[in-house]
Length: 269
Image (cartoon, rainbow, N blue to C red; front, top):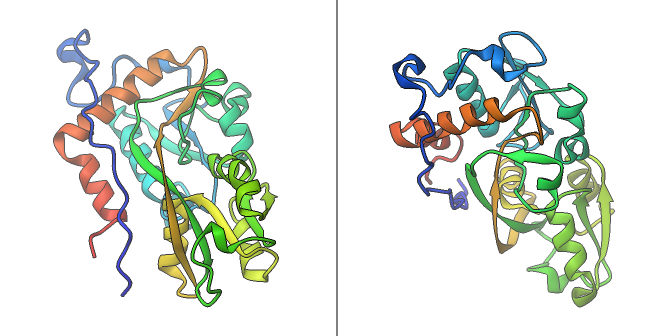
């Protein structure tokens, strides 16, 4: 069995924000009645995600919501903590990161391995960070490519609108590869499989998830970018929901729930 490349998980303590809620908040993170959250569907937290992106989010017909993964399990636990059901929508990554998905009522919140950055914060509000990840390069195991310096004259696949795409663009001139963009999360891997590109540059968690399931590909290089993931809500009007989500995250960090969910998707060895 291949040894899994372990991800560096954010362990900074998340501040509790329930101080003003008193005993009525119970043990969960709910800072008020769910009616205050302005949900698109009553008693349900509707979550936008982008698939396939194992082990973070992917379709699973056996799951109650039809989806599974680290992000889905974590946001599902938050929904339960708030006394809500869970529904999942997939409007596309651009709609998620721009905030359009939430503004148009596709969902209340997005959980899609979204890196927090200033550009995205112009269109959405982020939760406290819940995961840390780097960028990485995935290639065919028999390609002989060991890093970006082996891609001169080749195609490098990215997903449009991702921080991986930006990293690839920023370094294209230095290493001499052609950036090939795909609109969906599966596109770069299909391009690699077909031989249209020689590598895939994206978050380590996504590339490693593919490599762990397919011995024909391998992660050959990682790039420390200090990226942190956050859940995203619309910029205005979801303040109560965001406060409650942050409270649940803080509780989960404190009581071990986060660690249990993490270990379920990223076991040692």
